[in-house]
Each structure stands twice: as structure tokens, then as C-alpha cells.
Amino acid sequence: MDLGALSGLTVVAIDGPAGSGKSTIGRALASRLGLEYLDTGAMYRAVAFAAIRARVDPDDAERLRAIAEAMDLQLGPDGVVVDGVDATLEIRGPVVTQAVTAVAADPGVRAELRTRQRLWALERGGGVVEGRDIGSVVFPDAVLKVYLTASVEERARRRAAELDELDYDQVAQDLVRRDRSDSTRAASPLVTPDGAVEYDTTGVEVDRIVEDLAAMVEGRS
Ligand code: DC
Image 1: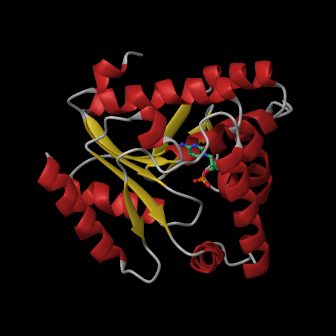
Image 2: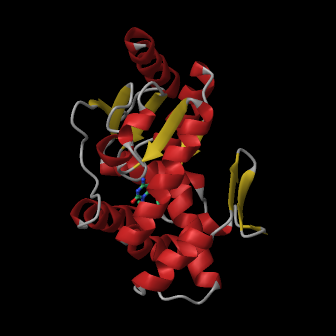
Image 3: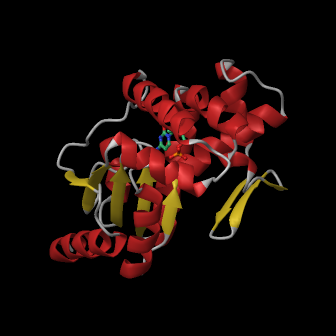
């Protein structure tokens, strides 16, 4: 798809490492601005879920791409349905979380999901889109690009609190492993996009962050 087709959309691109607050802030900012919200991490998790169900090895690039292209995905505020199966809980579980790193490193999967993300925004005139390559690759001309950060300790504490069966040390180790692979992979590594506003969310209230970001969007549109 030609990037020119995306000019004129009101896209807010939010990137950052796991646990930096992207989902909480993205959802709240979308509702504050009257825009829809897209969690692109859930799309990568959905492909991993579909691959596991089809018993496709995440390192088999050809079959993985075919799975991504054929996948019927319904992403809504109430859940995630993959090929007619409710995957809301399972995509957050340890099996999918382990497999998703290899899935997200696959260039064929990334190309397919990039196209779907751009179509999603085109159909809505924009939206708040959250992920790891949104301001750098998918929407380089977004109205606002934000790169969220937070200390490893705070990120691990947030993640462990979300799923109370998880223990803090295990979560912290998993975060560091995922940070490393997301930042060093060849296809669309996690980087601070050119022109992005860096925002450290450590110890800052969600309402405060949302108001700061909403003021930036309103100042630019
Ligand atoms: O944000 P999350 O933990 O749900 O993301 C799941 C995985 O997908 C994670 O390993 C990063 C990857 N991802 C990506 O590579 N690009 C995106 N735009 C979103 C997520």
C-alpha cells in the first residue's frame, strides 16, 4: 500500500517495550480523543495462537505467512476471536507469549499485519495504534508519535499485578528477554521512531499522561 494513501488520517502511534503502559494509556487516550484503539501486539499473538493450533513450527516462514494471510481475526473491546475460536485469555498465556517472539520476527507475518493495520486506520479515518514499529514503519506520518518507557522494575511490577499467578522475578526475566529480542531482530526492530516524543511513565498517574498526550494531539491537528 502506498503511504500517501494514509496522509490526512488522524493516527496516534504509540510504541515502547513490554509493560511501558502502552495498552492502558492507548485505550484511555483513544476514548479521550473519540478515536478507536488498535492493539497490534494482540494481532501478533493471534498469529502465534493460530500457528500453535495448526501445529505449524514458528520457524517455518512459508507456512507461518500462509497462516497469517488466511487468519480471520475479530479484535474488539470484549475479546479476540481467531478463526471463530475465542482466544481472549489464551493469547495472554505463557505458551503464546513464548511463541510470539519468533512469529513477530518473521518478515512475511509483519508484511501481512502491516497491511491489515493500515487498512484498519483507513476504514476509520485514523485511530490510536499501539505496538513496536507503529511510528517507525507502519505510520511514519502519524499526527503524534509517542515512545513510552518505564524502569524495568516498574514494568515487571505492572505485568505481575495484571496476572496474579505470575511471580515478579519470572516476569522481570521474561521482560528483559523480550526487550532484547524485540530490539535486536532484523525485521522492524523496536526503536524510538524519528520525531517521536519520549515519555517516561515511571511513577506518573495514567490520567496525567493521557492529558499530556491529548494536549499534544490537539496542538497538532
Ligand atoms: O505488546 P505485546 O506483548 O502484546 O506484543 C506481543 C509480541 O509482538 C512482542 O514480542 C512484540 C511483538 N510486536 C511487534 O513485534 N510489533 C508490534 N507492532 C506489536 C507487537
